[in-house]
Image (cartoon, rainbow, N blue to C red; front, side):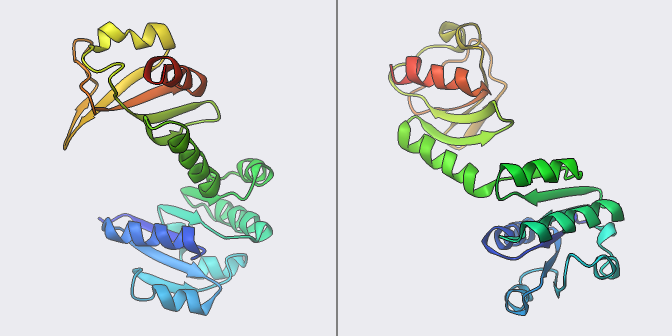
Amino acid sequence: MKKEFAVIGLGRFGGSIVRELMSQGAQVMAIDHSSERVDEFASIATQAVIADSTDESVLNSLGIRNFEHVIVAIGEDIQASILTTIILKEIGVQQITVKAQNDYHEKVLRKIGADFVVHPERDMGIRIANNMLSNTVLDYLELSDEHSIMELKANDAIAGYSIMDLDIRAKYGINIVGIKRGPDIIVSPQASDKILLGDIMLVIGADVDINRFVKKALNG
């Protein structure tokens, strides 16, 4: 059985989710109040529908409760985003992901029961800033307000040392959970595994500890 998703709001964020889900073989209903946007996705999504997501009867008529996961990607209209989320929750949708415009919006969304809240613009800004500040930070995924996973590129400062030699967990309180080496990836590397020049380390931990490691061990 293919996974079934509904995406409400077909702007840049919602549209990119529809395209990616379809490319991964999922079934996607694309929903927007704009006929132009719906026409754009008519040949991309499994089904594209013009609908007002703030109307409960409309969402019920679309069978929205039957979808495993609904993504609310409504752009600037915070009121519509909140009302849509409330209706989806009341209808009984299993999982709801909502795009937040700001921290206040996120607080409201969490209070009304959104399962996942994302800040695509803010998160992309953080990624770009990290990449600009250090040529060793390749990517960044926020796990919570204080914890992240980062992709760090091994340089001359640590190349040739084993994970045991670096003693990262004891010194910095972080863990290397994977090493990308060319096309290969070492999952849960052993303490005896050596870090080679150019390896990409997947590091998990508190932001302050990862940043301390980057500054002292990689850029020090």
